[in-house]
Image (cartoon, rainbow, N blue to C red; front, top):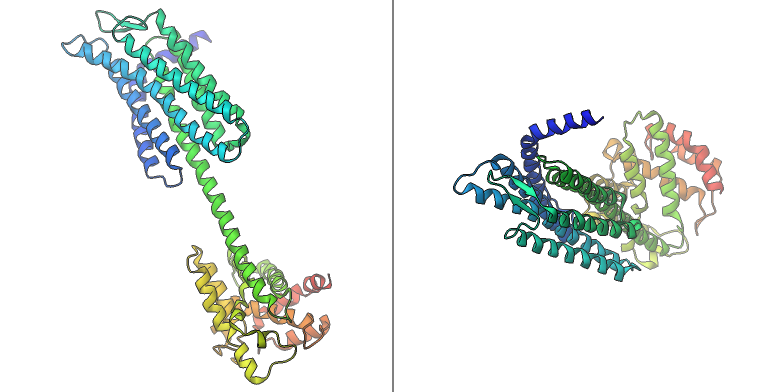
Length: 453
């Protein structure tokens, strides 16, 4: 095992310049990708950009040192020392930037009513204090042999004081891990994992660094951890944004359905109509999808079910005098009532005009506009015939009429399932689309079971 490890270390030592160049390029690319990422909060986005940029600078300075460490040229001795200083400095800087990231998480926890506010604040402050102290020690080291020296061949050597770094850097890591563990339940899984990797991997690499000469374990592991952190956190933020978007969509849907329910509440004769017709549409579309001769997609059917409650939204423009009349309409009143179809299309269009789902908007607008059209052209408001009527409106028409037949209205009692079925079947080919007949018949048992409840 020892021999195997030695071989692996030698392979890593011989190829590490190429590996460092690769990490350098990936970190710079990742920093650019972070800049153009829109889903990250501002502070965390800035922190990740700085992490990636610092990681790239570590690779640049560390690689410069390994290329020129034996060079004792007139100015090279100074440049090699500067490179080694920057190697350490950017390593500390990464820890400092990570603390900025954690502070932003802490502010989120405060908004959530986190009970450990004081403890978190102390931990994060102490991390900043240690990092500042390490930077001061690093600066002092440039003028004294406190932590490391260079020999006559311009090669870096650690002194006993180097254990200051070995002691205090793990303390920083421990405190950051403590912060994460104490707020474990508040962190999403997509953030916990990369944060632990970011803290644990460099810690292990630092131990290896102090036990093995000639290999930049710490620099390469920090760069790799920064890349992993970006990938996982951006992925997690995308999921979070998608979840928030979904919640906003649900809220918007509920608001619209709530508006439809309010409109329905003005009509004495149709209580519960929008809920029942949505269920009828769902049952019909289930049957349609079974053989799918009509070649409808599941997404189309989902949008149709979602849009069904909006079909009578135009009644908002009908006066209470007509809408709440306890009996049949006069011809004049019926003409006024027929206006709800075109008005519904207008209202739905205005409500959904900013929606990203244009197909849903089209379906909702069509069912509001054309659900009273008849296959023979005797319907309203446009007198469309046959396939001129959008399919979604033809499906909605069956659901709308079926519910009207089997439900009690102020001007009639509920019809029996047999009578309602007879009326629907007699209307196939004149009022309703004949190609939907087999789906209606297949759905009849489920419809009757639903209304029987």
